[in-house]
Amino acid sequence: MRLIDEVLAYDPTGATIACRALPKADSIFASEGKVPAVLALEYMAQTVAAYVTLHRLTQASASSGEVKPRIGFIIGARKLRFHVSDFEPGAPLTVVAHMTWRDEATASFDCAVRLEEQTVASTQLMVYEPPEPAEHS
Image (cartoon, rainbow, N blue to C red):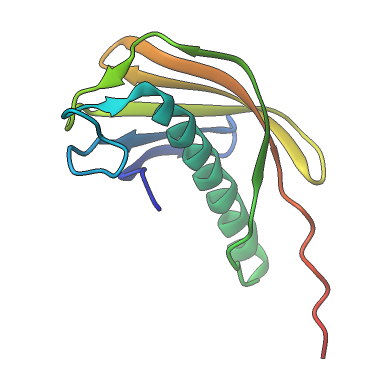
């Protein structure tokens, strides 16, 4: 289920991405007309996934390769903070992720969710993308 509404900016040189999420009143996560702030963790994870996908697309277009969807996992969320308890439906949230470290299969991203100028959630996500399984003929 895609919860990110659009990519606002992507900077492969600076290893940063910004996305927009608009909490929905009719979301399966909504309760009493509001969306719980814990959903910000998924907003941040999907923003990281968007970064990884755009990075792979950029590399593939340079080498004329094909990009297929791949699975990834959150393996840790350090210093996870929520500064609000919920979000108003339609409130435009800006979700920012900055890659601080990576190797072949894992990476670390500093992430934040902002409502206007206020940070409403933040964490350092550790993510893992397993190698693609060998194709059998």
